[in-house]
Image 1 (spheres, rainbow, N blue to C red):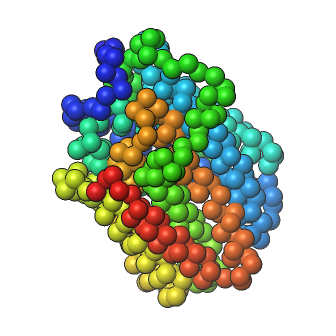
Image 2 (tube, helix red, strand yellow; image 1 turned 90 degrees about the vertical axis):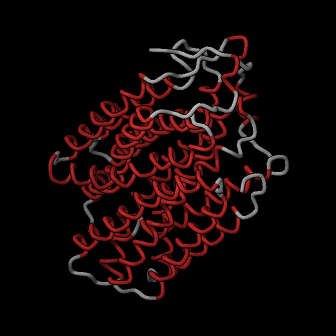
Image 3 (tube, rainbow, N blue to C red; image 1 turned 135 degrees about the vertical axis):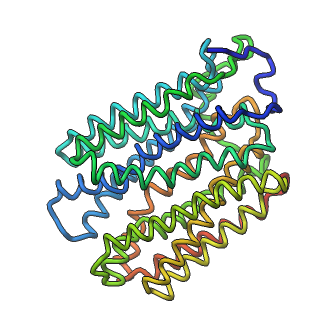
Length: 418
């Protein structure tokens, strides 16, 4: 394994990454998204429902939401902490690779043990451990974008972080539904695929931090570093706020779609129609993330793409709220996919350009990653509460739209990036 041992480890990269690097990066993310999203969409809800033994959907969603919320707390801690530790790692294998490997192992082992759990507490504990492994792994992996990818290539490369998410959810859910049937078998299959697909990326070069450049590390110092003043770094603050708002908006609009079809539209073919909606959504996510990411690189613009993609998601949510029909839901699914796919790739590139300190890229991107993981984790619980309180889905989708529009307004305040 070839290493780079230059004091310029903190410098902005200028050499374009190769097609091989991008391919291994994309393959790693495919394994990651399958291992995270197949449990969220299929294995975990089925496992929770089997333990609760109730058909009342609100009970199932609330229990699932509580487990997701607890795992979200783990993400709040794990993302910036492991990012900060990777920033200071002086291993001969590089700064990021040891954490990518460790996170993948923690994630995979936790998934396998999770598959054997027969209590709600056990499910909650090991899903939280699995998500912690996911955070360790992805905090280090996303930091490699800032470490190795030049600014003019980041939109396109970030698209290869986003597009595998769309493929991963379809492929992962299909595999655990039709091939690796059964809870333990499904979790184990996702764990093995995770390790196999992440492994090739570990053979790519990773910069080694010379020990003389290592920052002194104390518990108090790490905790204090987690606060990034929005007054001193307003662009980072506005980008972070925009990401929180848009991810909440997207999660409110997508996580309860099955229940919307069943109880909002009284659709007798809800399962089949949900698959159609997911396919439409994912096709547009893939197209938008790759095409718009590259286009933003060529134009040298990020903010306009993020603003427009956020607004498109807001329009889609309002369509679901005020025109509750299956045909309109299909149009909305396409718009949500188009908006979120563009947002995923271009916002990731934007985030790498507003980081306060090149020496703490891992930690700062870990904080950014919280803004993606936590909304997705706790939105089902909040959404179920809104639907139960208001007696329907209109309020949920209006809230989704308002969050998306607010995210667009927040990113418009960024000044240092076009």
